[in-house]
Amino acid sequence: MSEQSSGNVVKKKRSFEQFMRDTFKRVLDPVAGFLLNFGLTPNSVTLFGMLLSAAAGVLAGLGKFSIAGLILLIGAPLDAVDGAMARLRGQPTRFGGFFDSVIDRYSELFLLGGLLFYYVAQGNAFASLLVFIAAAGSVMVSYTRARAEGQRFTAKVGILSRMERMIALILFLIIGKPIYAIWIIAILANVTAVQRILNVYKQSRLEE
Image 1 (cartoon, rainbow, N blue to C red):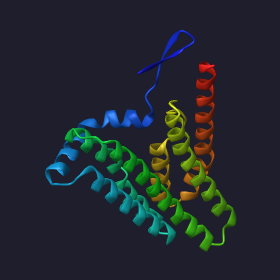
Image 2: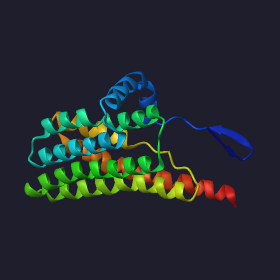
Image 3: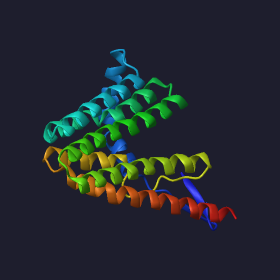
Image 4: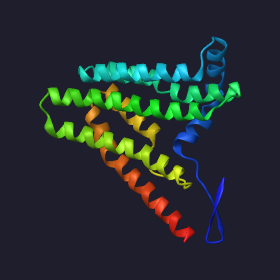
């Protein structure tokens, strides 16, 4: 895809998430095909991924960070598998894309909610506030893109997409230091939201 800017054609760079999906396509497609043959649907896999995230959130809330990280490591790839299933089935629907995006938000908030519960229980007010800021940033990254696309702009820019956020959470949960992931998300997710706002502003200026 490309877009016109001041008479020049500017090629859009692939996001890290798209790069990872393309790189592991040879692995995802056989797994997706197996699950389809087993009788599962893309939406059921999406829901199962959310349940794993919810379980990870509960474990994180109990302070069992490493186990939570391992469960998340199992569940996170399902976000790519369900999309591959829909593509292989040849029946991608608008509702499927909508449903996947909504469930992704719930999955992430379940996990961050678990961490918020943990830090509140520990009486750590600053860490609790940081989790709230991280959750707000994560939601705004998604919201700015959705709102932009609703206005027929594009907003697939920024340094911290959902995949990068999940990698940070998985890594630091496994090593028992989730606060580092919270710092990263609290700062860079909000930076990403601002990047998307500015990107849409630039596009709107080109229309004037």
